[in-house]
Image 1 (tube, rainbow, N blue to C red):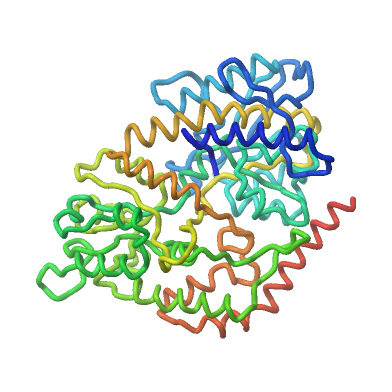
Image 2: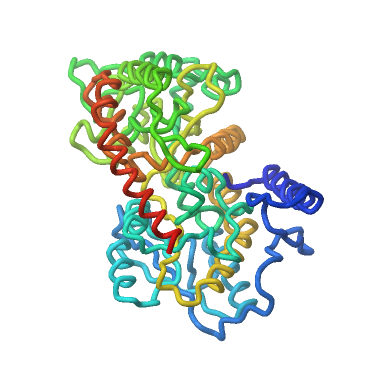
Length: 490
């Protein structure tokens, strides 16, 4: 989780506490962060980077996503800026890079492409060192990892993924046998942009006497309450036919919300054992729980007069947005980035976490869509240790430049229109998960989208599908584990 406001202060105190414990203990704690130094402006900065690091004025080139990856909204904005700007994010990127370029005598460059995966693969296979750092979308990064074209980030002396400027959930959930081949954190805003969230129309909520914020605060924001609210608001325009452009719905969304309902239950596709290896939970308690979640989700999703899904209607995400913007949907489920795009909307809206399956559930749960960018380093990077040092410095600096600009100004200041939305955002980002077995990651044997497939078909036979797919899924998973073992041995 990225640290914000009070959370940032706690992160700083935590780092000092861990450093002190390591110094006073008997050592051997590989998860403890390396030492950092506190600068005069109260920023933490890596104190373990090589002294007099100097790139001799050479370029450090990042391969990033261009405008054709999904659409222009997902064009990389967090790595390079040509000049300073009134836009807070662009300005933060420019000033961060200027600091690093002056400190380490380098030029930070980017190459944007609509085909990040194939561009990276062709370059690496050709033995070229033209891209020192990759910021590809999830699917491309996973494929590059499977093709054994990436460096294990945990092998790099100056890269410390346990530091607070790296996402700790990704570090822990997405390691395999102690290896991490990709990461995210404060160096990028796209993992925030791609987080699946809920928005609600305040005018409709007030009209029907609903207070979703209070539901969250009172721990009554559950699947059952969510369904009640949607059914209360949804109504036909009078012709008895479900029509997306005239009826009012409980929720407007598209089919990725099926995945969101799975992760909202607090579960994941794979778990991890003591050897840091992923495995599928085949216990009856897990299968029974997911079956219950699926049965309840069918009642949430199935009624098309209550839930408008643009995918299900053969339309696009544009129509999803239009239904909400026109005031004909109580809820809108989409990526967080859409909240930024909706900031000019006349109707006031707020954001919410996805509801818990039931109130006894400990935490909320959210997934990150595959449109996010993941940081990795190709094995063709010749100056890899020094490049890793620059990446570490860049991520650390981003914690105090890019993240505040995105979170406090671009979001809270311009998009969200109340204090509660910022509180809800804290809950959402604190409860995100990254799931190696999920549809947006490896999806071994198709189990990553088994829940969603059944839900979209109004089927509840999870146990049958789970058992039928297990042998194939384990085989695919073992193939990837074996590849990592080969890399570790070489």
